[in-house]
View (cartoon, rainbow, N blue to C red):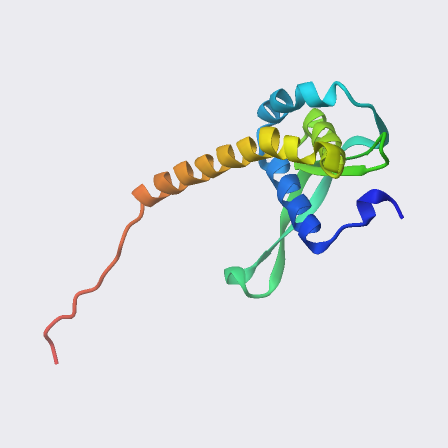
Length: 156
């Protein structure tokens, strides 16, 4: 069994979190924050970054029957670190460099030697930036909210 296949539930949740943060972050920010860490390590490419399509599904009213919304472009990549950890990434869009870097970081983050340092210096700043973006967007949307109300007429 390879090291990346030996995950506890808490490790799996942590991995899902950092993979989500890297996938949603701007590629320029991710690459800039991680350059110093990645340049020191060697990775074997298992599946080179490649662009493809995935089917996006929706639900009527959020809970009803499913329907095919359409296709979305995505980029995926798989690498193996020198320590034997497999790093995976799936990125919305066509950015091969972003997908490659996210896969490399995923492999490194599975190694306890680098994990805390990478979480502190890369994942937490990216997560903080994403939270600020979401808050800013929520404030913009809240400003356009319209409350409708009805008046009861006095007719009987």
